[in-house]
Amino acid sequence: MLTALGITDVVWDEDHRTIVAARDGMPGYILSRSVEKNRRPVVFVYAGDTREADGRSVHLNVARVKQSMNLRLADAGLVYPTYYRKLFSDLRDAFTTAVIAARAASRGAWQADGTTAGTVAMLASLEDTTPILPKLFRRPGAPQLDWDVAIERANVTDCTYWITVKNLTGAPVTFEGRYAVMS
Image 1 (cartoon, rainbow, N blue to C red):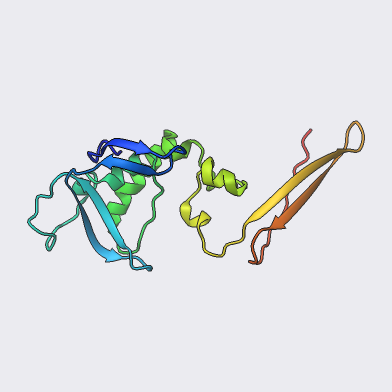
Image 2 (image 1 turned 45 degrees about the vertical axis):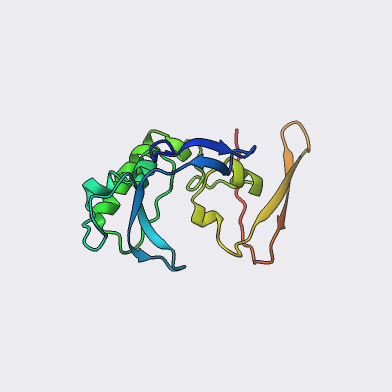
């Protein structure tokens, strides 16, 4: 997507997490009409020059949204959708269609998504390998758990699982355990 935005000569840090240098003097613009609860603008990002002299009277329709980096990233499976109340239903439907297609084709993050699968993972795994909806991961003050599993073989047919769970924060934690007997 960096190439699509006209960003070239990208140099990453050794962990390939942060861009430390890039040639990014290409034209681009954003369209916005609202801010979210933390007063950050909710924007649509575009590469290239805008056709309007200013942003006073822009009608954002589905055809224009399909040109946005937002929808291109959703179609590639590289972002999770977050729908704000003020997003018009036809625009929301365009994003939903793109996300459903990306998920069905296992593109991008959908290859390993753990959001609806009930994935429980170590914090390091969530940071590096198991994608989940960011709003579920980055809740301020949300509990974080660590656990260890030990298996004790009682006899040829039985074993005992010892699960030790540790709350890593001061936030209250409620969890439940489930099991299935496999034959």
